[in-house]
Image 1: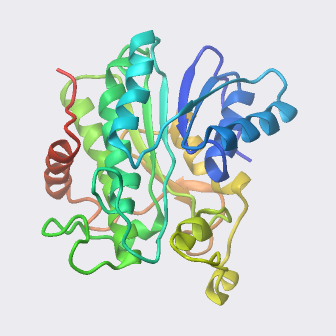
Image 2: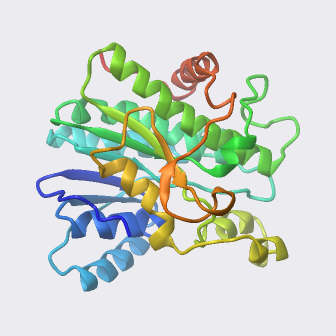
Length: 303
């Protein structure tokens, strides 16, 4: 099991910290000495997760703050609260996401839910928190992608799937966009001579509520796992969170790096570098996407 290095004195924000990989990451980061801000949509669920983590780590420094990544106003409020305090931010973990709702749902700002929550929300949050990150000695932004990014394409003619919604393709696009976010930010950091590391990870096939929660949106009965779900090799959050933790904390993790399981089909196993197909390495498309996201979110890189 990956041992998180000492994080004493560090301030870390983890989105989606109340369940799955976000909760596991929060527990292990706090257990290593970090103060973790649990950025969650439901404060009630966040409190439940906090108490469970404190049971395992009574001395953990945890703080709950509300954010809804499907609401750019909520993202702005969250960021402004931290900016007003002025404390340097050592690590931002863009973990939260939603997966394959059966019908097209819009965010508060009118974006397709997966594109809005999985990409535009984290994009805006990252831009808004960069002033605090750049105040830290060795800041990092680690963004959760997915193995489904391998199948993603950026549909600039219809980023919000307004014409023909395909839930799996929309999810794949959003996770490819997350990977491109991390790679473009790494390039910006290099160009501007920042000390910031920006990288990404994917959890393989990890058994969390991600597969069922999103797919149950709009349904009267929750989605059950399919036969294919049961046949694929899978792992628990303790293992599935390790690529994210490695990217966020390992001294060997590099900027523009991408990490995931290296066992069967890239779905399970120990952490290592994840492969990148041609579309993932298309930095021109990534730059174009960054510009589009700036326009859609009204956020920019700091001067």
